[in-house]
Length: 208
Image (cartoon, rainbow, N blue to C red; front, side, top):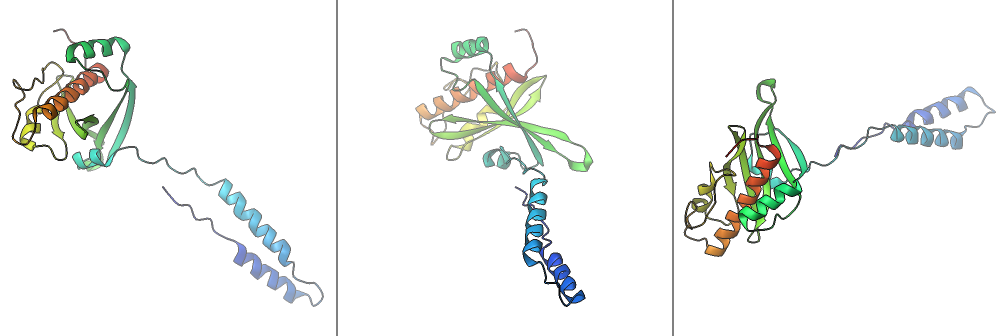
């Protein structure tokens, strides 16, 4: 948040008051009037100051996952009801929120603004799961999944997957050392729901 410092004119007014007293032996300095003028000027300047910039909504986890980005744009989109029905039928789980949040990352290298990825944060097994997406043939494809305290060997299996993949633990997703079956299934399910939501909101239409 920018802090705007208002230039005080109290010192200038005080000098003017002293000059007025020196120019006349009989006229007293109007100190009270000077103070009122300074207060009025300061208040007017504060009222015309530019409004404070809103805080950046981007979570620190997202910024850490996309270190090459210089700026982020937050997207809030409602998942259509019919899409929620399809997602829940395919995954066997509830969509956690109809208001889907995603963060588009941009680089300004070379003076050109270029999108360098998109990311979301989902909850699973009591953990924050960061999902980073690229675009592949007009559809969101997972570049990387991050979660503190979860085996990188397990998480790297999600790379390259999209909404058409099953994310089935024991089949296309193997349980890695250090990840129990329940945690693996919870993470895989949450990632699949998000992948299907991203396709609904940002993917191009295509036939299966």
